[in-house]
Amino acid sequence: MSTGGWSTRLAVAGATIVLAFLAITGLDLLTGGDDVINTTAAPETDEQTRAVDLDNDRSLLAFGSSTVPAAPASASASATASGALDVSGFGSADGDSAAESTSTSVQPGPRDGDFESMRNDQDKFTRYISVPSDQLSVEALTEPAPRPDNGSSPEGQFRLACEYSHFSYDDPIIYPGQPGKSHFHMFFGNTDTNAFTTDNTLINSGGGTCQGYELNRSAYWVPALLDSKGNAVVPYQIIIYYKTKSPDSVIPMPQGLQMIGGNDLHYSFETRNELHWSCGDSGNKYNMTNRVPDCGGDVINASVQFPNCWDGVNLSKPAPDYTSHLTYVNENHPCPSSHPQRLPQISFLIYWRGTDSVNGWHLSSDRLDAPGATPGGSLHADWWGAWNDEAIELWTFNCLRARRNCTYGQTGTSRQLASLTKLEEYEGPNYIPIPGG
Image 1 (cartoon, rainbow, N blue to C red):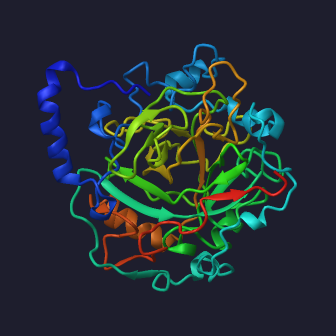
Image 2 (cartoon, helix red, strand yellow):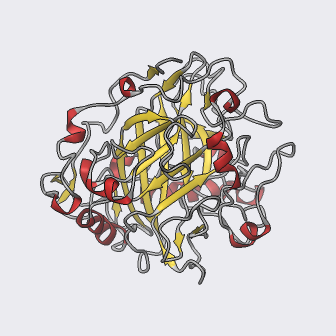
């Protein structure tokens, strides 16, 4: 993604625009503000509101498959024309052996290992683990809201916090029924997501590590971030955004919908607002890049955005397709006739505590031996929907469609999703050894 600064003729006006924007939205998530890039390295538009611009030929690919000249091109002509994500690389990325996944000397443990010791097994995540979704009590998994939302907004906004759940070599979208086949993943949301997950098991069983717990049994996962010693690096905060600039037409996320977002290659990508690494905590981000950044001890973060238009028929697509039932459009544009249903635009914002050095840090899906590869260059994410029907309607209709700014589980009503911790941050160890690693 290009990070071109303000043009010369807008240099003076830029500061005024930024201040006006901040006055409307605020920086801090606690007060309902967007997570924006520090204007010392400002992109042309603020983060999480700029979708892929199909009128710009540099933005035709969803998160533009790799633009590193030495890396092989992966986008088909049809994908380029439609703005759909070309995922020809996801299967091969997930299918690589651990020894093939990186060129570093440190590798994750054996694929058939027992990773239960890495699980975030707090009792609060699983109090209703066996209760079917339609029998859950929304009142029991929500709490009184100090305020229903943070006021009106030009776009409908809903955010919630999550903690990590578990790690494994499973990927139920790319390799259903094939445990140990993928690269090493970090899962959050449903506590029981594995290679054998189905729509039914996801919706009606498992705990939840996001606000609202079992009300949100959706599965969220990303390749694990590994340090030079072979430890999994655990984020202290995960924020999930559901937003729309088309509140009149947006629909609740369909139960069982499967999505993939991010870079489908092993190598690298063009830095964009929709896909990037950067430094700084929420509201203070800078140094947007396509690699795990050296932030001098400051917070390290990653952002991945998902498609926002659906064909209205298919919840998933089998291999080797995976994503043609979805497409990206600029949030200011209508969905195309091929994908007429407007979805909330989902973004994962993941924050890790700072370190003195990121030398040797990489994602489990990286191929650092590939020409032009960057550590963290294979950044991507998966989402499989399993919200409780009543809960998802609360925030879809009272936040998104009502054009309200809802943050940290606010639903636009007198109830908000039950909190995880006082600060909505993970309080466990930042580094977890991988068994057998």
